[in-house]
Image (cartoon, rainbow, N blue to C red; front, top):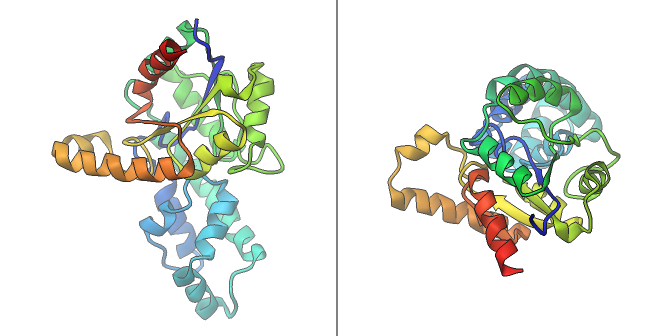
Length: 261
């Protein structure tokens, strides 16, 4: 049995959707509806945040804010964020299930953790309506966590700790140091840190690298190492206690931490 009681996973870029692709094109298309040109790089920058906050962060970027002012006559307001969000959510609902393949080794990692006695939780920046599309696809692949906390389930989302507090209750897992939070984004790591958990960043499957397994496999070891180092810097700066390549590496990390006492 492990000294840890639970592992709480993020979804896109961590447990499913290697490279975190599902939301990217949708953000770009949602802004296009309002005559605004946004790049994939701009869409990736706030990843991990609740989607309303994500759109607000994009609208606060000077190139987008300036376009909005030129097109609509004023700097973007929260009411404008609401308008883009109302377009974004149904668009994301339509595509999220298409990007719900498990990260290679993810099911085996969860099975190994359960065998060690850990419960499996999950939090996400996705809304409940989006996750209703993703859950059946993940379940069909053998992944069904013991709980799910969505961005619109609570009054405040990442980077605050409320989602993790809900996991403590749902999973009956405490103290915080007995819970591992696994995520590929800064807001997700900050969520775990705010709640006092052990935080583990995943580098190669996540948003900071943004590549499919096939694209990664085509790179040289030096190129992969450069991408790994880039993602690791971001995750460590957010406060990650440990960084692994993908969730497939988590059981070995847990065994090592258990052995260290």
